[in-house]
Image 1 (cartoon, rainbow, N blue to C red):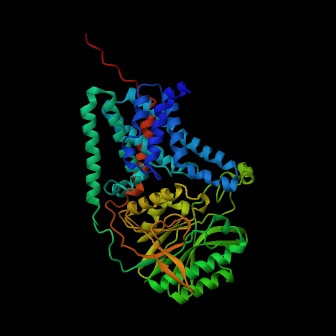
Image 2: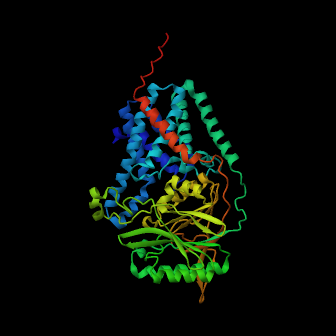
Image 3: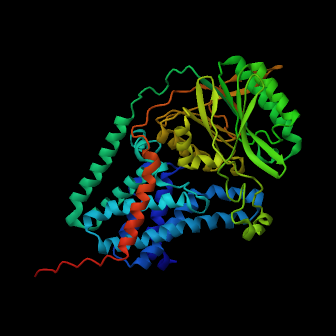
Length: 522
């Protein structure tokens, strides 16, 4: 045990420190220094040793950040633990490859180029993690920086990848300051300069100091907090629908609402079935407020099911968007012909992906929908802005994972989709946090609950210690206007260009000869 700690202790320390930078701990300043123990411990090792230590650090980091995946143990049994560890080990392979590159950089690149080169390779690693084999870029380091309102604005220039690259580059310079006394002052100065410049740029990009702007458009949000087992029990289908209608009606009677938004998986019956569609149309007609809600859509020929969303207008018309990016092993099984046995282990499947994006219009506002897992993919949000959306709507159901860190982590991911695209974003969740995020990443949450007083339902502000996981929260919030992108198209291309640069650098390191050591003078 002692030998293992001597070998991998610093790697474990870095994995823990970096994981604490993300929610739920969210000690975000740790992201600026959390890599130092690992980088310092591997700066003079062989590529093989460095890869092994990076692998351990990545495994610890991902195991803590993605611990919410174990929540599936309730549905899949012990297989959920193996599945969670399989994901963590797979993501750690990327770290191992990066560790090998780190070793070669220290022997082949000029000292002054190591930090930016490693930052570029880190960006490439996160970009590949987010796209290869279905993609799971959930734990990108830049997502830790949401509370830093100035620095987080830099994402509008190059996406969350740019934040990750800056954080890692600063970590490398500080490591060089610790490791080499002759470089100490210069490395610290350069690291501080980069951090200060990044915050200064972010301050200039934060061109809306008002956190609560007046808006002519308001959204009513219903957070159902229904237990996950209710959603699979046919006896609760009508109950959940009736309750949502009743409580949303209370809000419409107390607040001005231009659009109601309900979360994913609130409606579990076929959306177009008369017993489902008719009550929805009656509710919308009565309140004269359009409703956007998660839904289930099925086709009999051929037999296909879709995780869908629908907008219902007061005249009874409706339009549908089918989720395009499905959650692996939840909504579909990757390589199902080879992994069909996964269904017997509790993995999901059977959902068909949609084939095109869709925008919805309400009055003079147009929004692009993202359903749960889709918020993870920056190109999807970017595509919806390019098509003409002036705000984004994320509907989600994380009832699978209880009160785990997935609730706050997904909110942080949604925050950066808003910042990157300079669009306000509405999140309607079944559990966790629902509210409006403005184009600069500031969050306002709904804070009302529907309670019974005598024979009547009333909409009140909950007591200070109310449990967000238990109470059904509702409310109406103003929706800000969209803002202008500082560099149109930058989010779309930065990750790709940085990844090409990182891969090119990795290839070059395979052929560059080692630096000649400077002979010592007597």
